Image (cartoon, rainbow, N blue to C red; front, side, top):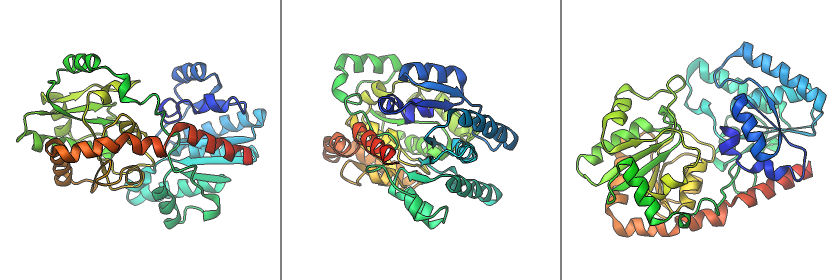
Length: 369
């Protein structure tokens, strides 16, 4: 999913300049991805949990592959792929070992788990030759936690791991008829103000607070709906039982699961609500903006670099149901504010986070190495 969504199109672009191999778990989807991007693949069994025996087995398998391939660059994304990939690349004497930081789960960890994750993060950066936090906030956090020396760190372009294809995420691609049909299909009234969330439906994304804020607002406003687009993760980061029950049974909450193409769902929505606890540089906030939607986001790194409070969206404190509800009420009831935010939403993304600019900046970085 990280290759498909976080790096969509990037490897296909790079194959015109390098020989590219995509390495990931989920063998079947990896094969489909390799065919669509036109790149070679190598299947590596990885888990997202802390699984030392499986992780060391993955390091050894990857080390063997890298010794045979002798790549000039190994570039890793996500925490688990980072430690496995950087360790294997270091053992195999790969000269350029690059790791992108697009979010840190350790930010929400405590106690022994936080100490373990801190150690793994420092170890990843020690094996790497360069580390790319994809937002200014992550850069400053890494420095403050002394995970590595500043000389190893740099940000590609203005942030983001992949930018946004603003020709693909464009509201003019969707007709009024198609939007009317999709709302009917989902059972959403045509006159409802629709708040959308796109992403994993987990605790760390603020879904418990989002559902609570929506229900509070819905008690006094019968013309709003909540559209949830994304998968549940019941083992890694489950939602509260009452939240799950409310999502399942409330007639104005519509959960459609994982969707390969989220643009149509943005097209029938009025605003994105993204109350995450931690992020790197969230694609979904850029996607929503490119589709002309203002966003309500939490005051965390990445989100507060894409959204200018009062310009293209609203910023609230993390984990605050009250602030979230207030912001949702503002967007749904203050027509002038909503119109002003919506007017500038797409322009803010097109001018700063075009995908081709990110790819060119990354290509320049690769070539300089």
